[in-house]
Structure formats: C-alpha cells, structure tokens
Length: 295
DNA sequence: ATGGTTTTTACTGCGTC
DNA sequence: GACGCGGTAAAAACCAT
Image 1 (spheres, chains in turn purple, brown, cyan):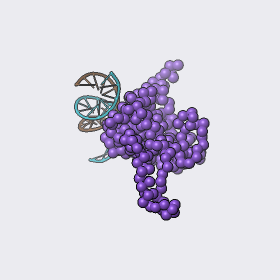
Image 2 (cartoon, helix red, strand yellow):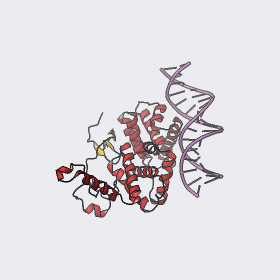
Image 3 (cartoon, chains in turn yellow, green, brown):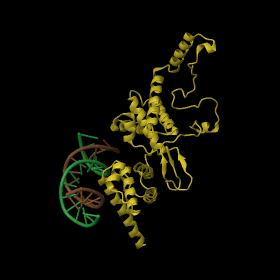
Image 4 (spheres, protein in one colour):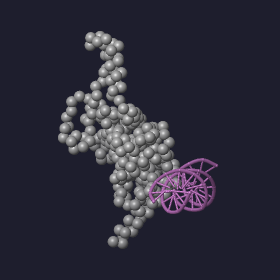
C-alpha cells in the first residue's frame, strides 16, 4: 500500500520512493529525464544538444557516424561497396588497440549495469571512473571484467545506490574478493580523496523492500537510524547488520515482531550479528537516557 | 605475513505456546 | 517438543599495515 503523499522517482537509487515515508514501490524504473549528463561546469552551460546523446559509455562518446544496414539500392549504391564501407568504418572507429580495449570494458560496464538495474547516471559514472583509471595507466594489464565490475561498484557507492559487493560480483560473474581487490586498486590509485560511506538508511529501505515488510516498520527504522547517525555505532560494522537490527527493533516496537531469523536472511547476515547490533543500539539509547536524567 | 576487528559457526539454556 | 531469543567461545573472514 502507498501513503497519500506524492511518490518521487529516485534515480540515484534506481527505485521509486515516497519522500515522506521512504517506501519503495519499485526498484525498476526508467529514467525519463534528459539523456545527457553535466560532467563539468562547461557541460552545465551548454545544456542543449543536437543529435544523438553524448555518452561516456561508448569509447568515442557516441560521436561517430554509423553506416546503417539500409538497402544499398535505396541510396543508389551497390550493396557490396556499402558493406565494405561499413566494415571499414567500424575498423577506423576502433582503430588502436587501446581504443578497442576501452570499447570492450565500457561494453562490460553497460552489461553489468543493466544486470543490476542501475539507472543511467550510475553507469555513466562507472564509465567515467574507468576512463580516468585508463588515463592514469592504472588499468594497464588488468582484468577487463574486474576493472569494469570495480568501476560499477564504486559508481554505486558514489551515488548511494545500495548495491553490495556481493551483488556486483554476482552480476559480473566474478569472485567477490576479486572485485574487492580491483575496487581497492581504484580507490588507492585513482580516487584517493573518496570517502566511502554508505548511509544505513539505504540498506533499511532495501531490506524492507526485499522482505516486503510493513511500511511502518521501515519508517520507524529510518527514524531510529537517523538518531544514531552521529554515534560511532557504524564504524567497522557491516551496514546490513545494522539495518537488520533497526528493522528488527522497529518491528517489535510496532507489534509485528518479525523473527530475527527472517530479517537475518533478507539482510544476508546471521542472527548473531543482528543481536549484537541490537545490543549496541539499545546500550546507546540507555546511555542517552541516563545522560538525560543526569542533566 | 601479521595482528586487530568483525562475522560466522555451533552450542547452550531459558521461556513460551 | 518446537520455536524464538539471548548469550558465548572459537574459527573464519576481513582489512590495514
């Protein structure tokens, strides 16, 4: 069920969410917005374009001419020569080995992104990340799929799109550890100033959505999690476990009482982890209460 | 390689339906 | 007795150095 407020499409998360209750109605939306993306201040100024969208996902930014498969006779040309032209056009287009490699990786990024239902801005960011890495020679002699997957994962984090390393690994058909290694490589070599921090709120809405829990549970869990935002409860802990704990506490508070086992399953952590997080959260609150009574 | 931190595994005891 | 829950010790996994 939906609440009465207007539902907004959250393209960064790839989900349709209600702004007041945070309910996610779907995680498969089509981005109907402009198909260009402002990459720098220069781009922002020229907000108009003519022709096909300029995209980072193609190695030549989609700017070359395609020779289509129309019938040669319609153009008054001989078919064989048109075919030859097309072949040569493609060869010229991806002339150097480097460019072919780039085209290959960007293609992989597109495939992984669609596998993960990622909105366009995220895959564009992934392409941008890989381009930067390639420019800095970090991608030299590295696994194509690995670099592509790591770029996608980093793009997800940058956009706050709740995709775990596990999910990206699954979509790319790679080992979790492998994607993680390439991810760290990019973090260390390319995106040095990037501060990895995924808000728990993203995981909560995802978890509530995944388990089809009552929306009220989600709302309260979000509220609770926001209160501890400034505490040290997150550091080093898996956000899934924390999100699970909030959802559990919220479900008890609302009288639904979802078993820990069930939440743990959806959150992809064990019950023990949920319990430990619960204990910490509750301790945090009891400390807060004590401080309040003292003052 | 190593050491510190976190998660998982496996097991136990308690209360309730 | 089955289930949910809270707890613990030890193993495994993870991560930074």
